[in-house]
Image (cartoon, rainbow, N blue to C red; front, side, top):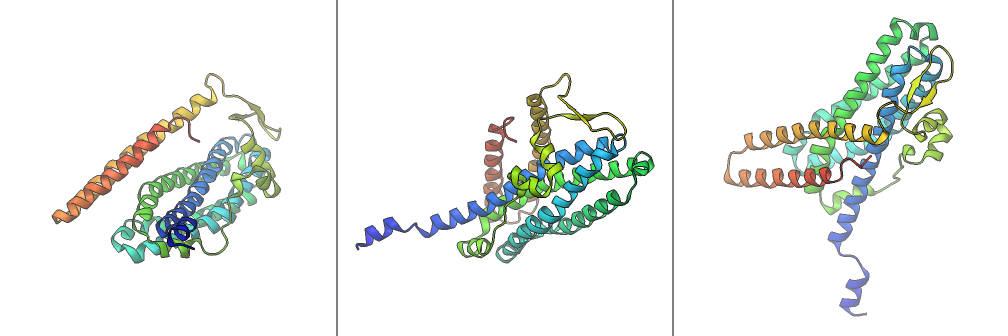
Length: 285
């Protein structure tokens, strides 16, 4: 077989590297998509916790169990392995990521504590001060997780694709690669039936009181598409602030002409990725 024929049949090393990198990053972004949907449901259910604890709490308990079993025990270790490779290649970039690594442990401990409190509280307690406190804590947990995801997407994911090598991606892709059950509703329903049923339903609010089953209805005066647009543009405002903050931080570190050139390149690359992201709004989920 000629050299040309052999070359045609075997993908170039750079192509294999790119495919491995894209595959690993797609796993992480798919995890974030599932997490985003579950966080939205937690936010909806915490508002109904006091008025309908009998229906809201079972969904919340399944959601917290999903977070602990998959997101905190599979997704975050997957990110931590990526962090470790980045630390070996570019310690300076890793310093900007250390807080994200610490937050993985803090958020896992918080999710476990919230799950315990939800399981222990009686319906009567949830209708009172305990319900008010738990609802606030759940809302704050959702806010922190969303903020954590945005910073990972902006700083961590973009940096990984730039600094890691073929050998790094080979190590990262070795071994089993579990998929997020939130991306496969029948699979999710096998372990979390109430949560899966809620995620499969259209955009809605929970109404009613006491132990009655919640009534599902469309939000009056606003369409699901309009809700999605509002959510997306709220994210844009936050991401724009993050982009500006990162650019300022990069230029403050500049000490040499070479560092200035690198800062320009990094800032321009982030700007291009952000422009591509904006081009897809408000239709992405």
